[in-house]
Amino acid sequence: MNETNEHIIAAIVEHKPGVLFKITNLIRRRGFNISSISVGSTENPSLARITMTVTGDEATIEQVIKQLQKIIEVVKISRLNPSESVIRELLLIKVHVADSRARSDILIYTQIFRGRIIDVAPDSMIIEVTGGSNKINAFIELMKQYGVKEIARTGITALARGEKSLK
Image (cartoon, rainbow, N blue to C red):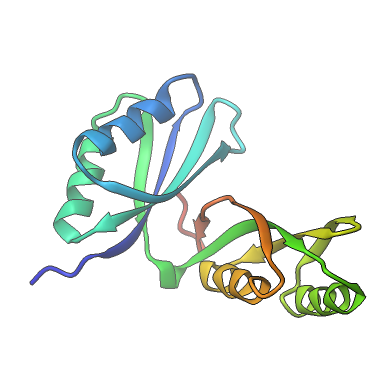
């Protein structure tokens, strides 16, 4: 029986219009699922880094990588081992604040999670938390008791530890 779970794929691609569409469309056409995706510039302005989490078994992931390598604009692609990588995600969460007690509790929880208060309004707060997906999920669960008004998550971004590089 094949075990299905999430795998992190990182790609260095040419930083030009349409490349992200080509990659996501290829994955969509083959029926693969992207759980999260983040894209950003690299130290070289002509290249971008795409980090995606793809759900599937070993055969599925190997197929995804082989297909992505065929795209001309893909410079390099690699699978990241979570135990040998630094993985982070950014959360912005707007939470309802009913009274001063709730505001005080939310501030304490934010400090415990090493987050930051980004905005304060009479009836809400926007909090920024950075960390692994488990930390982000735990903070969201904790904030549900106050009333989550809105959430924005970046999806994961990751780099291999040590000397390993996707260059």
